[in-house]
Length: 443
Ligand SMILES: Cc1ncc(COP(=O)(O)O)c(C=O)c1O
Image (cartoon, rainbow, N blue to C red; front, side, top):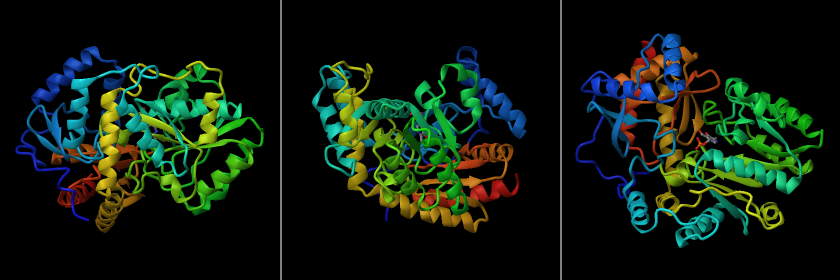
């Protein structure tokens, strides 16, 4: 499938990779120093720890502008963005048709009155999101972040089942506000400092990475459900931040059966996998129909909008609660965010971008394998296993010096997670693969 040129036209100036100053250059360093003096010290502390672990400088570049697959930093370096803004910019940076719709709404009505007085564009967005659910009558709660969508799903489960327990998975990530943080299995370090404020309702089961792990995982879930107090099983259909791990066939269907048997909801966290990135609008539908699906990231193609969409019978619990608004937010359903979602969903479907993710991602995976790299994942969410977190950080840094932005992920940070735009220019992927093979061979 060729590139949807109507979506991404060449930028008159931005074309990369083009490294004119070893990154980070002087302007980036200056900006980082100013930020380090006022921002929460956690970020500088993390960079220092990573520099020590990897033996590679981790000083950041400063983004100046971006378009399509390219990011220009404050020193005039142009990078190929293999992260697409944590996977959110599924149409590349600053996609013109989406930006145009958002600008229209910014001029007309930056903010309506959320759940009290909505504007029509919110209706358009909610209708489109509900229509993604494979059963008629689905209902939607909007939010701004992925964590908002997970929070809404967790509340839905309590209202619909009356049970507070949640089964989640080791290695999974659902955001860091308190609802999702309590079920974050990626690394104990996220929860540990806040454990006293997180409750004790979360139980963890191993996430199966291959067929032999399947029984142990489903047995652990079954054991957690046996107590009778679990109202939700929350699962990423493919681990994203956990390293692009595709579970073996039968996992999601097995969870579906267990949830139904024990009166719990099956919540699919499709914040990373959804809207085409995994190769489908919802990755979970390959095996089951979840009760609730969480969307974020790609839903707004870089603009902040998320959604919790659930089957009618489950979402009905919100209507039976007693006539008070018990879930809302000032910016939930803001017109520019809704316009972004509408434009994005229309473009993803008009250009068949889920199918393109399968095709282009398959070719990239093959090329990486031919370059002797160990690669997993699906669609355009691929993970290259580099063995250790220290090596992955050093390789990421080596790639930055070559003009490619990549992130590390996985439970030990040992994986390079590749989430380029679904519209990515295939030619850039050839250069990327060559550079990665080269950097990995010498790091
Ligand atoms: C699967 C998954 N769920 C939820 C989230 C949280 O999204 P946000 O960072 O927008 O709150 C993320 C973020 O990476 C994610 O990968």
